[in-house]
Length: 137
Image 1 (cartoon, rainbow, N blue to C red):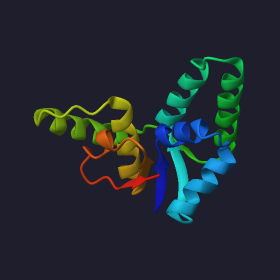
Image 2 (cartoon, rainbow, N blue to C red; image 1 turned 45 degrees about the vertical axis):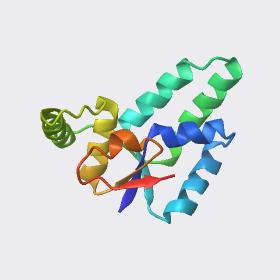
Image 3 (cartoon, rainbow, N blue to C red; image 1 turned 90 degrees about the horizontal axis):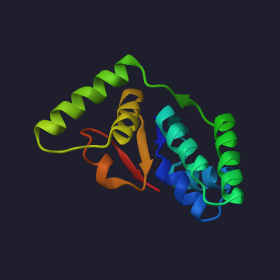
């Protein structure tokens, strides 16, 4: 089993002044020695955040975290199987009046497809995904 990190976990670590190594160590202390990975969607969200940084120093720090992340963890793409699963979940959820943001839906579907949990601070969206195990970090 393993863990897919949501961007909220890495954003919280950055706000706490942690570098990526410190953030990973904190996550591993809470989750054990399970494999830690990210979805390509998390990578997209973090790249977006780096560009939107409000100071050059913050931008440089976010870009460094991105580079460290690229070297440190597996990054899973959105496959046809993940897209089909996300589409099924989205269709069922919307039929029940529940809307899950597409980024969170794809991250959650990636975790489900891999048999992994999601580490997040965003329980509101991820708890709407049936069968998904959520780890508070």
